[in-house]
Image (cartoon, rainbow, N blue to C red):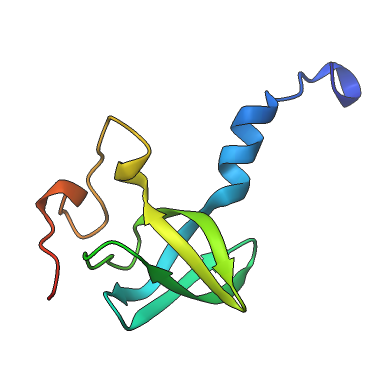
Length: 96
């Protein structure tokens, strides 16, 4: 039980939230982009050959110097939600 009788969220849920970021500038293959992560903006790269659009939720899976390595949320969850662009992650086509 947390402070004031409020239940403390499960640690696994907190870990998931702590790793979430939101794409701020499109992340393009081989060029990168920018995400909002823990109240700051960070340069980010995705190792998949897909473009991630602003507003998409991504997960931080690593770091290379000051660049965050991210993966789309669709890689982690079975249920895919429509992003702010109206496109489902499974509908995106990678840029070669």
